[in-house]
Image 1 (cartoon, rainbow, N blue to C red):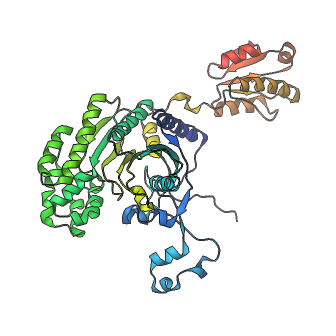
Image 2 (image 1 turned 45 degrees about the horizontal axis):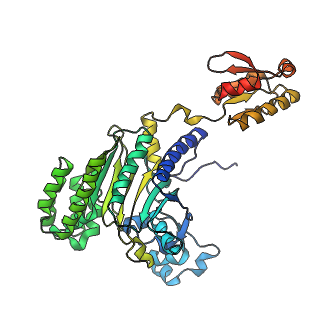
Image 3 (image 1 turned 60 degrees about the vertical axis):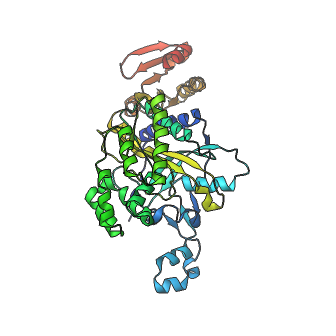
Length: 456
């Protein structure tokens, strides 16, 4: 019995039109990266497990895909772990490699490993797939592409300003209006934890707070209580849940709340600098918004944190995010190397453009003209012309068999090929071509030069 074809949950096949649309987004983002001075690098699909584990918090670690060691891995497994059912020890003894969870940690490893070849500050971009053992849902996949840009070797806040401009540049190029760039600062979150007496629970606090838009205020409070944060401390958070108004007015409220926190006031100062610069420079399509509940539950952020929301009419998760990390390379032995970076969520951006009908009609430009095949003599004559057309940058092809005319025309229609060329005995004798416009149904007898002109 034949095997039923299938693919793992959370993965997808892509049709030619889908690939064309994805490439449109890739090319737009890549063009903006290079305009802003970022250089491309690539890293392996999988890393040593020790490179990835412990860098994303407990929840992130659980979502890392582990790769079994090759060969008879069970015979080499930690038998004590196996007998005591210690899954962590057992996993580490049978799996030494893992698929990358994101592009940032592998980038930090790259910087340390190649530090003697890099000119700092180093601006890099990377467009590659990542893998997460997450629960698949709309806009959330187990295999997906990230499009990252980072700068390491500079703690200047002008980098954060440039990244906000970079987001705006990409969304302008994609004609995606109404995007919101949410910003917060990890120092503000540290200050809030300090004020409510939960400094020793900072990670638990930020992980819970980061779920506010997903599970709501009451559930967030319940999770904080379960993590040992006091009811009194949670009550002090109440003003944050209802904080609203302009960027400036929210910062004024924060200054009052965080008056006793040196760390928190430093975070406010950094956000004020960024906001003032963006106010002066202006944004074209995006809006910058302060969101003090934005936490992005990743352990390595230390300063500004970003999250990008799609236009309100599209119900989908974030379409980008990032932030400042002051010592990410320190985990690999290279201290005091500040960096900041952002990521574009290609797959979600695709869904947004599709829902808003923002893909250009020309995005699926593949074959512009199909030559009808009437036999070997006509096919050879056609291929000579096709060679010239291709050299002129025109996508052209010959139908491979001398099938019935109706079949070849139907093939052109189904592939949305806008023109066909018919070459018979008369055309060969006169060195001309009959060009048919498949949209209008009109036919023209043209020379090769005229054919090029009409198709360009």
